[in-house]
Length: 142
Image (tube, rainbow, N blue to C red):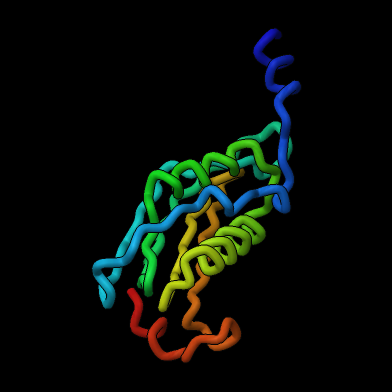
């Protein structure tokens, strides 16, 4: 009973309260390379009091800056107490990474774990035409 009361006292966040200010960068010494970042245990609140889980893969093609991984980990911790839909989760993360790092290209894929026997995978790629890309690179991405 005490654990449940402690949980209820926790401050829950909404999607628009997720901060990108904790994302830090390093000078990119490896321009022209693909950096693949895997986050196998991403947690967030899909519905109040119901934790949700996902597996994230980020393909990052840095420009002047690259991702400082410890800051990415701390950034992702915010989601643990955030009520957010699958679609909004991907959208917020994409916009934050694009804004902070301004990469040549960014692709994010999140596979959300089964809930009620259903799993969902969402993808966004900065090369898609409607996001300002060329619509050429993503077609060859496997």
